[in-house]
Image (cartoon, rainbow, N blue to C red; front, top):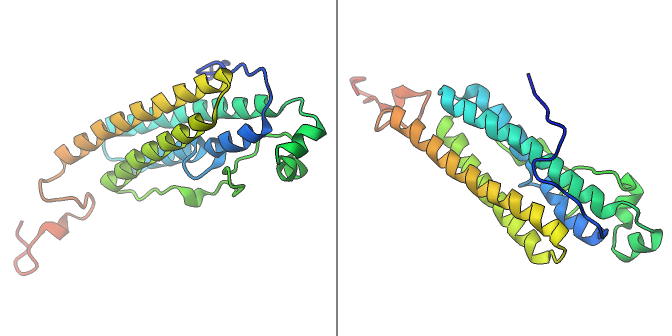
Length: 205
């Protein structure tokens, strides 16, 4: 069951539209390292995670990523509302406008649409958590790149908040990885294949 609080996790109040910047920010909506992929990744991985506290962490962070998706959508929406046709053409927003008008649609900054092929769920806790840590760092880099393009403080502040949360999530996943490693046999990095640790001749450990 979900309990939805009807406010953004961080406020977004953008006064000046900027379609060019919106085309960069939208990558964190539906791009390869964006919030949609992060949420789907963690909320899917939780089911095969054998340790309850780590599954709970995946649920918590996956849910928060949905809140981040909402923030990014609000940024893109506010950057593109009330645009004139002259502004749309001048900012190179015409191709997006033809397909989506000024609706918020999941794609990368390059225009490539969101796909589930952008994330992995292996069922192996170490492989999944290592991917999660890498994903948080890639998202942080994307926010770094966006911040290099941002001059408007109304856009900058929510992006800084999202970047900070990527760092926190990376740390939390690092803690989760240590929990998983501590509970596995010291030689067993194949969580569901303990036979790999046995001698082929006698079957002993």
